Amino acid sequence: MAEEKIIAAQIKKDSDGTITLTITIPWQTVKKSWDEELDLAVKHSTLPGFREGKAPKALVEKNLDQEKIKEEVLKKILPKTYLDAVKKHKLNPIINPKIHVEKLENGKDWTFNAITCEVPVIELNDYKSAIKGVTAKSKIVMPGKTNTPANFDEIVNAMLSKIDAKIPKILTEGEVDRLLSQLLDEIKKLGLTLDQYLASSGKTVDQLRGDYALKAQNDIKLEFALQKIADEEKITVSQKEIDEALQKAKDETERKQLEANVYLLANIIRQQKTLDFLKSL
Image (tube, rainbow, N blue to C red; front, side, top):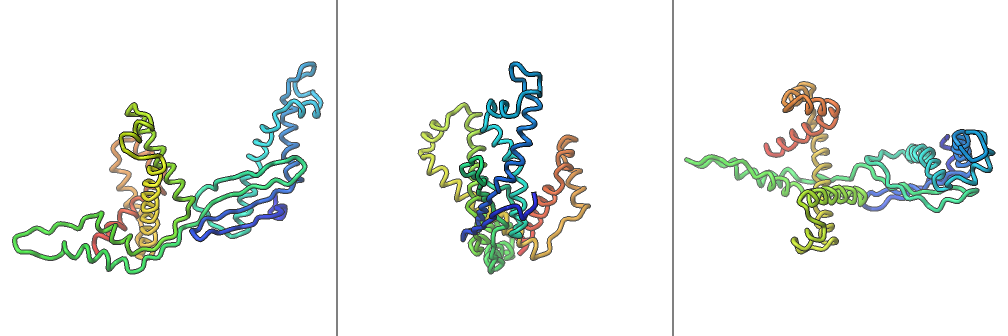
């Protein structure tokens, strides 16, 4: 499916960085995929009175689950049209899109919305001065006393207090969903229900979600702030550092898992080096 076959690939950017692509696929393009799915269904049909694959196409279509065909057609054409729209608008999404499909009717163009985002806008401002205000106390030499390193949470809080960040809502929502799913798993392991947990904590679902939304925003803000600091300070990870981390794996299984996710491992090492850099300020 070539890019020019997309009737419309409109884009809307919210102030927080959330991007909504509204994509319309011509019925002619949909029909081609629909017929391919129908031909496949005919090939494997086993209607009474007909040998497998020999039933009339119109009869097979009449007996098929139309929603199932729509689902298969969407699986085939939606990813390609989304990527075409991303390319058209020169976007660099950092997450898989959240898809909202409009009403789909045969004979009419199909439309769907894809919600995504790019890297959040981060303004570091004078974060170093804020951190130095925390770490300075640990660098004062007092006779007879051992210097205590600055508290990590104090360093992070000082940094975040100076940084401005626009966190896309879709990023926050995704992280909140992940945290809630993790909590539900933990509650289930304890043999409790969500209602029992809420009663013991004295919170409602909305309050719990609000707490997680605040945590998610801070976590995301910290993650991308560290990335930007690492970029500005040219903090990199060498192959030697990766190899050393692999050697420290507790067993062969963990080592293989790390080897299969070397990119993630390198990011973790880079993040730790960035945190060490902050502590040294």
